[in-house]
Image (tube, rainbow, N blue to C red; front, side, top):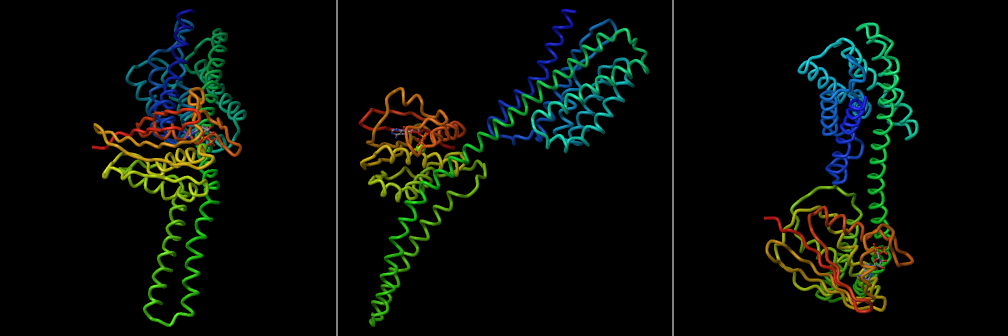
Amino acid sequence: MSFAFERLLVNVLFLLLPIFIYQIFLLDKDKVRSDFKNPLFAILMSLSIILCMSYPIEFFPGFMFDLRQVPFIIGALYGGYRFGAWLLITILGYRLLIGGDDVYVNFLVVTLVAIIVPILSKTYMKLNLDKKIVFSISIAVTTALLTIFLSHYISDMPFAYSSISLNYFMIQGLSMWLLVYLMETMKNNHQMRKELAKAEKMSVISQLSASISHELKNPITITQGFVEALEDENSQERRKEYVGYALDELQRAQNIIYEFLALTKPDLNTMNIINISQELAYVVNLMKPYAKANSVKIKMEPLAEDCKIVGDHQKIRQCFINIVKNSIEAMENGGELHLRSTVNSNKVYIDIIDNGVGMTPKEISQLGTPYYSTKEQGTGLGMMIVFNVIKKMKGDIKIQSQKGKGTQFTIMFPLSS
Ligand code: ADP
Ligand code: MG
């Protein structure tokens, strides 16, 4: 029995392993969507099945079972017919390969699962967590019971093994509960993180919009002045000059709007080769009105040309915007914000330096914790996004700060060769 119990634990591990691999290497790295419909998930489930089948549990001489039905049902529930068919082929193929008795029972049960479970998939997906658990456990237990009955009637397994059978369907039900619970929690966490990032972006946009609409007043007033002056001007040359000025100002207004709108575009999640200097220039331009509204001067040293890195340019922008915005906000009575970039051994370093309120080492260590904010209007999500983006682009961030003196952020990205 103790050997069987060890085997059972190993089987449970085989169920958990692919789920954790999926979470750590794919979901957390945003390489897949959170709904488990990616073919890689089907492949991981088939790995689970093969492992379970390779190490069956023998509770009683001649009565072997394993937990293969659990990943099979999960695959068919989450991925429908395509996953169901793929997993069916896996089970039957592997069974042929390793051989074994009561092929018929196995064949019947898995074929039934492959046909019926995908039909239930759509209904299942609409349920809430509790109902999903009840639903999936019911399928798992029914399948286990079916296996026991068919084994009795087709393969003559004596019902005397009923206590073993009881173990079997309880274990199958429990494993199902564990897996569905884990998967759904993973999915929810992943979605929540996405929502948080979106919420922060919207909050930044709304906070910037006030200063940007203020900034638009200037070119509009100037244009208005020139158009009015046109009315009383007779000299053809002067009129031309005024029209030129007016058009320049309109162009400026258009640029301000255009840059602001670029920020509100939905995320595309695409990694490209991007020019970091261009992105910094964009951010500085975008943040100028906000800086001005807070009496902050932005001083950008001429940037190193041709710094190409691999990244998602919308995310990089968001990251710089969040840091620059914090730095501006740290200078409550105005000040200067310095930006510079240096290139060193295939890496680009970007310094963002303010002479604002600064932070204590303890405050620095709290940066990036969700909802950590010392501001009345703060969301405490800005730095969390910064850290996430930098990690994702394989960069690094260093923070030096002195209370009352100011803060320097140094961000490193590896250059693309
Ligand atoms: P929020 O800006 O909404 O408060 P963030 O995650 O962007 O959230 O920042 C968290 C906190 O980190 C801020 O509330 C502030 O106390 C501190 N902080 C961030 N950047 C600076 C900086 N340049 N100087 C001083 N404090 C900063
Ligand atoms: Mg912030």
